[in-house]
Image (cartoon, rainbow over the protein chains, first blue to last red):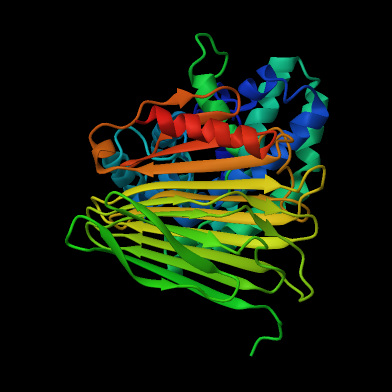
Length: 224
Length: 253
């Protein structure tokens, strides 16, 4: 058990393909809803408390050893956009490949066999954390951070935003990420007794609507 | 006993196949501010109107509406006017629960008018639908954040739809003062003051899911993971939201 494993898993250079996704930022930039650091912060805050909280709770629950198939179904029900379900499964498959070679585990192998086209990324993330000897809190932090780190990095490329400003946005969200990780772990612990319905279900209508518009573009810089 | 002075009301509807090609309503139970009226039937379908609920639950109140559609029956429920969530004298939030059950070969159309979240109100709405494998559903939910020119109250709304014991949709939208940050920002509502969902469940969608369709910048029609489709829409006002949802429903035929 090593806390430093969290740094390996959360590192943007971990080869899991996340850099190809903008978390909805590309569509929001084109639609004019993100135009600088302030609107990026607002975007990230909204994503963190909706999709981010859901992802963090799914990851924490998977790290606790909750049945990943049930968690994957819960993720489907919380992701109405087929484009986002597809992106989550592609990311899950890429993460699965990297995690299995980094932290070999029978549970990861079993999940990979169950979902050859990929399980939802947060579920894989939670099991990867478990395989790395990490706990539900670590998994929740990792997912919460990813939910905002992706859009912030993407916006640097999309808007030529100053990387210092983008990093400042993330740093100022840190206390809210703490709260989201806490809520996620609390929810994951309730799942042990109450089942997956106890998971949060925060929705962000414009992320879902925007993802479908984005999927229809002929040319995109990011996959989602 | 709880210290809140709020009102508790439970209204019930039971729809049953009358065996003569129509639908009877063996239970149509109004309660306090929740009044139910049977209106003119259309073909095999029974129609019910929720009236007198114009002022929605106030702080501390807990309203519940339950409807059960038995095998082979067809029920359509609407409301006479929009429901307004207002602040109450009793402390605490208000709850509005909707529990819907639809049996095999039965159909429910649940098409109430908008829910308006007035300034200072604090309402939690939970809509739970349980459908058998061959049940059919059209459900519309519209929220308007604030009356004209008014800041909204706090509104949290969760919608859960189960088909044959499997959850196909579970979504919660929280907005207004006190909601987690970013709800009015570019990822969630971006200043739109009307938001809605239309859920359509048909057994034939299992084999043939509806194709995805973007309906302008503020709406999309999406096949869910199950025999269901969802239209999610945001709009500047209630009128334009209704137009988006109506068009999307018409396009499903």
